[in-house]
Image 1: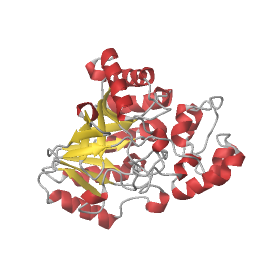
Image 2 (image 1 turned 90 degrees about the vertical axis):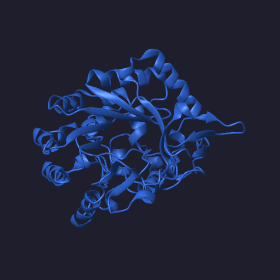
Image 3 (image 1 turned 135 degrees about the vertical axis):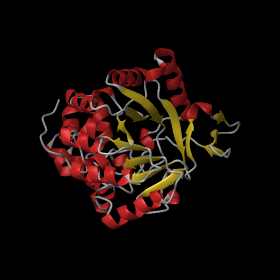
Image 4 (image 1 turned 180 degrees about the vertical axis):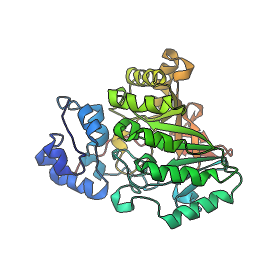
Length: 355
């Protein structure tokens, strides 16, 4: 494994660390000009430099393939902007809203579905004025039972900001649950301090933390310690995983990940089919490949270790269980959304040609 002690935030940093060849720098600088780059020391140390197909590197080291988009891809693949009635708010489901507190992350995943909206050029945090407007929207919308804190990554905020957010939401009586979605305990575990854990609990509401992790090697000794600090504090933990070609699209890897998570007191929640974000076709599997993997996991795993395999339908129609889809007679797959609408989804996973 590589010894890295500082965050890598540029192509030059990646070259110096030995993760990128100098001859590839031109194309990758073009990628970096379009999409943010960042890898924490924790993830850099988890990479095996002798493995050309290392699954950790594949998630964080940019590729020239990101410069070419599949025709089906779009800047807002799940329709966040279509369902944003106030700054920082996405209200797609009646009983819950997303509150996007930050536009930055400790790492930038190369497959991120919000890659057009995150990064330091998009403003680091929600302004005080926009935060007040978001709170006002939640307060005047009594159907909102749960607030999902997201971004970017909300746990990149200081414990003080996290506590202030929790305390502000605690004044809204109809909000009963706060769910923080984060990659921090995995990719920057030292940030999960006693002060941060206390800040998460500074509310009358029930608090959940949803962890994003995609490969069992991400669960280092340090990240296991961070997860334990959250679990020991009594915070229920869920996981979200993205099905990624070349990272975890085999049953052995997913089985190991889900078993490890349960042993760490984390309930596997969602296995996401890859979204149609620009320049990510090389990460997506077919729907049928995902179904086969889920069938195999059902044969191997206890129910407490099984996530739900979901697709977030383009156009803001919400998540649907992939295993309940119907294969169309001509091509593609038919999905029924929560309102009874039917949507055709075509696989968009062919690797584009690299310019």
